[in-house]
Image 1 (cartoon, rainbow, N blue to C red):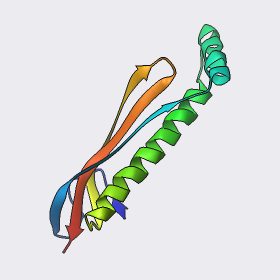
Image 2 (image 1 turned 60 degrees about the horizontal axis):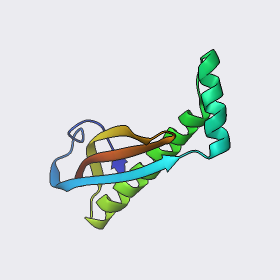
Image 3 (image 1 turned 30 degrees about the horizontal axis):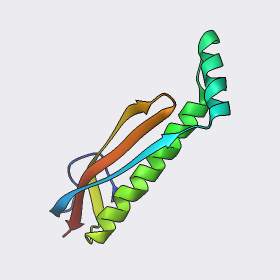
Image 4 (image 1 turned 90 degrees about the horizontal axis):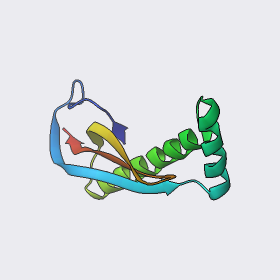
Length: 103
């Protein structure tokens, strides 16, 4: 599956099949959340949350690709990601784009 964050596939004609998306709500365990809270006192990257969001993006992307495959797509163009806090220590990540068939 070709994944692009531009609205076309260079050198190819495309047929739009529809919007596809994948979403996940991910959280860290209490121990890591507590340690992340301690990190805010001294500053710097909170590695546990970085890892959590990277994992969530991977899951959301896979779910989006699965939806595109179900439509018979060859690619997903104009991919975008969004995230929001659902509660302390948990975030929703969504991946979305347009599933296309290459001509």
